[in-house]
Image (cartoon, rainbow, N blue to C red; front, side):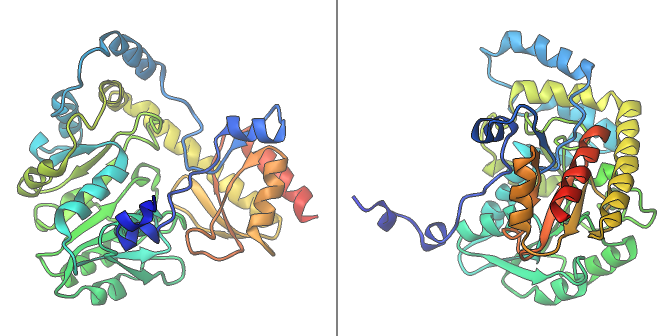
Length: 365
């Protein structure tokens, strides 16, 4: 049977998302005893002991369905953000929330505007949903917000801005973002994806939570995967006007955030001091890694996240393969649309960063 005849053209033309290789797979394939992963923008520091303890305790009740409404998590996060829980929508990672917005808002013939290159999930999700994506090229590795506003037309339902941007690590300033909100029609939803917001140190970064009341079309998308080290449990959330959130709940899968994820997120929110310390350690290691890469003669894009975009001479796929053979996993950026010379390196622990630099030095020599 030819199953391809059953599927929409957008699905047939789309390649599945390809994540960075896990450590175990590389060890099996290459017969390596020691492998480090600097490919997926994960926090190299594991979940905090209090979070692990909460998960262990909750595991005793895995025969029960999770709280579909995420009631306790909503109260905890709402208190943390200074918002009533009715402003919050939780998802199985940020990816599910992005998917929910596109599925709920976009009909055939309508479109979604986003920067390119940016988070690869945007074009993939748009491709399988009526091929609704309208990418707008970056300028100097940053979102060209005026061009994105000009790309909005009468058929645009959603605009997505990744800030800081993945995979470049760049950001748009508060003044730029406020001007952008003024330029976008008030009946078009603006979703700002702030997965890396806790790593930001730039003083002119937008304070988006303060803009919500004045802009009912604004949505803030954040995650527990990065700074809170919960990538394996998948907890994302949106902050938006309660009227919009109420409609989005109609598209949410039942029990979409599992029980362990909910208790882990609540426990992580209590650890504000250590969360701030982790962000500070990330910044220190990012600066050291950037300096080491620049000393090797490589072009490094300044970053406000927990990763660096690096341009290497020649073919990045070959450099990535050579690093892999030395037990260092990084991510080539050709699939993101950044050409053959770009790789993304996540910030690791100090010893991991040194190992990456040493391996690159060997390869480039």
